[in-house]
Image: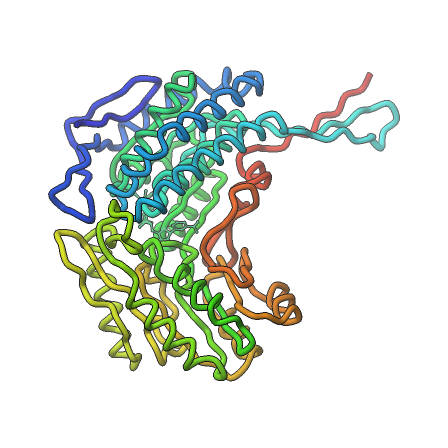
Length: 474
Ligand code: NAD
């Protein structure tokens, strides 16, 4: 089946297409998706500009109702959409249905936020003058999304953008256009007016680059790699656009001597390997104090070897495939590098079948100076770094160019509380995996992981609105 762009309320086909294949079975073709270029972005921006004034000034009840309906439609179709997600991205069916439900919750949350866009009234220093401070839409917003959460990340950008009265041009990752296409379809069914939401699919170098440079796009929200994100930020600054970036991570999870080992091993397995390690919040550095190091390593090695790698649509599968050949090649280069750098590599073999299957790998004996401990790998691999004590663990945890999520497993309230205050990260997890967050609270990091205001929860308003201060004399 062919899937078209969604521009100005119309489905617009392109002669050029991208074939969307299942990473678990390269013979399974999900569909062919239109592959646009700069011209399609220009058409979409024109449609979004034309729709902006009416949408920006529409009753918040109308915006609420569209988002609420979209959330309800996603829930109704969660199994079918979850299956599509598992087929196009490769995460397990349980994770994929969970992510789909998350997208619905995000739409419903921001339906409510449309009604909660409050302002302030302040007494002026000048007698008789009234001062009000209101939040207005920013304008046409460009959204650029990655492949690893192909329904949740588009949802958590689209929903607040629309809730606060902006219009949108969205470009999904080339590897996963299917879920984004379904969201466009759902918004149309939910009664979103023509031009308010536009979907243009195609390569980042053309569609993404045009979104970043288009003079009528007021703001860009980007999630993806550090290299692309930094370029987007520079180009946005040069073009005078507001910009928000969510990028990579090299997230530490500290395990100290007093940790409950069942909790620590469970958190490490989930954090490092679930979703095939393809999460920006993955626990890719496991920093373990010496008293518990050997026991933790043995138990984690055994538990990782037992994880079932295979077809994401099989309910028994715990780890689906790597997303594509190029990510697989990169994973294999890091496996080789780990050995070259002196790690004792445990696991990491290839799986069977016509897909990109790989067993989880543990890099025992790693140090924090090694490249495998400093660079984001984005695969089912984790360094185990042995340290003397909690103080060294904290220092190693913070010694990274990233700062997205940071965790500790401990039964000590004193250490948990100290870690929470001293971790240099946007999110801190105690006795939990570094991955796995709530949808109604801010998401984002520090240092090289993020730039600009936070996403999600009530904090999303900061990026998707602009402040107007008004003075009225009687
Ligand atoms: P990527 O940077 O390759 O691509 C992200 C998006 O940018 C895609 O839609 C791509 O087409 C587009 N793009 C590429 N070149 C562009 C250009 N020149 N101008 C504008 N857009 C361009 O990232 P990816 O491989 O799709 O995703 C994996 C990365 O995403 C990882 O580094 C991961 O850590 C990160 N990620 C971060 C978060 C977070 O919230 N911090 C969440 C998920 C993923």
